[in-house]
Length: 180
Length: 390
Image (cartoon, rainbow over all chains, first blue to last red; front, side, top):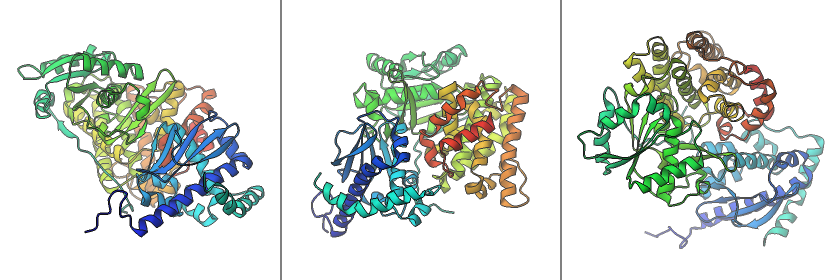
């Protein structure tokens, strides 16, 4: 039988899943940065965070992952990988990560089903989780938000406009950050 | 309904009953260890309970390497490091925690330090960060509430950064839990009531929150029944060994349940009340439990209704009627405990001042347990519940 453990002999389906998670994380990272520049709600959420807080989202055991940093009143996407974060939100494997990234599951369900764990201070993990929910509001279509959020957000006209702009700019933003 | 996915683990050996403590040395021998560090507190010592532990070593091939009896109610990083140093200095090979949640959590964290060879607890914050097998650990609870003798969590205060550090790992589960009725017999009525209400909250929240599963459900139901049938007996007749042992078992079963199906908003609020106003955890849970259940009526009403029979509530009418009756049964129990031993039923009675409610609500939304609550818990929702409970 073919040995598929370890980095050798990865199947096509594994590579596809890894690529989907990789691009989803990149999208989340760049949208985090964009939304933090324009959303008053996200600005309020991160206002009390210490400046310089670095946090990562990733998949065990060795990625893919992204890192982000709180700088003044916004979040900066640092790029792929774990860049010395003080806090990590980790998915146990690619299948665990795929479920929320493809809109099949909300983040609270991922935690409740033991698919995601926090390494670091749980209080800070809760803050990042709330911020991520705000970002997802701009990244995910309404029917997915309705299914995955405990209380789906109602967007104001201004927020809808921002969402439209984020969706239109997303591909360019991903291309601009793909090598980071 | 079966959940689409769940995990469950409880490898703890449970020894419960009359003279169960006498088996301590035998269990140590089975674990291949012979020199224990006892971690306890002054309350346990002054109640004469450590003497009982010492006598359990008589005539055995095991010994006590040292006794640490200075565990405070909210243990800290400094205390944990002291305990770990004592363990190494006295060449102990296992931990025996005798006391409530604080002694057990201190022993769990000291075990982390000893096993991982580090004095920096911060490195292990969060979930599943421990990879090495820990030193053998035996838990002897002297309260019937926290369930820490069967849980995979520990909480310690960082006295330098002024933050709470929480740790979750299957490695933190004790090897053995010993429930001996004589160890809880000296608990005063009010503490008996508060700790049992903590256990009842564990069982009820674990039953209706998002991580519920068929295995944890069965533990919750058994726990609720034991507590409801025996708590008032313990208060009215403190020397009733059978009732004491039943409530201790209820607390243990509730501990197994919530270690595998996390609690929700009641605990988030109780943690906030404890952190901001120093309200004892069990007292806060007793006050907030009916309000927290009410908060989840819309999303979890049908599940809460299933608790009506074990809570001794009416099972007639619609599911919503039964859920409301279940909540009323919890409220009635709280009132009865207030009459019998002065357990507060409002936050005001527990010493919370109204100007602190906003600070508590701010703390609540950063508590990990809100994740598992069926209803979304925002700052506004938390504040609303606190005002009702005030």
